[in-house]
Length: 279
Ligand code: SF4
Image (cartoon, rainbow, N blue to C red; front, side, top):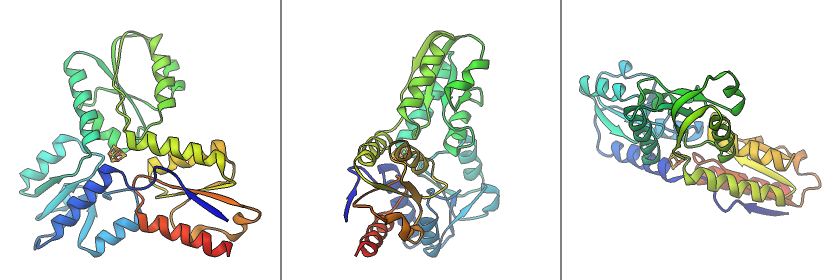
């Protein structure tokens, strides 16, 4: 059986950077270290960090002393201010691409645009982006939602970094007939589009596709959706234990991809298990 890994798969720059910052913080630290929410959407990595003394909390109010790490998704700037007021050391691991989208959103508001955020309403990155517009932006998840929106004068668009380009195109097309002036900042990051394109290509070539990553990871879930559209035999798994032997019946070529928050060791375990089952 042949196993092919997608050309772009696994940890992205932002996640690697955040994990490096978190691990560096543990060196010689006597004070407790926290992340505001799980540092990445991968339960196995979060557990591993916990073993190294980095614990996730939901709010700065839960922390009296020590260091708090802002994860790649970024946060409402008021949260950073509140943490510093409590004398906590703040390590800002907001991905630079997310920070760029936040700056774009803020500058659009300043220039008088109505901001539209293309993204998932309940995603923390979108909540952070919204805060950079003083909660004045309109969040649009898909083009269908534009039906009930009235005409607007000047609209500026920013995008949750893990969105698909197709969704952005559909929403922008829908906005064209609703706006007099439309400015679009495509803030989708390359890591996402590269992983999506590589997953799409590979899923078309193989008999079965495994998408590895947290079930709570937006970018992994999107990869799984893309693969499923091209290949009905596509499965989203978090670990190698979830692979069912029956899936491999009659399969000659397996494709494997992983979300931007999936570590290499989990991807390797999946590949090893597939190969072992095939023997
Ligand atoms: S997917 Fe892109 S924006 Fe998100 S953390 Fe990774 S590099 Fe940054």
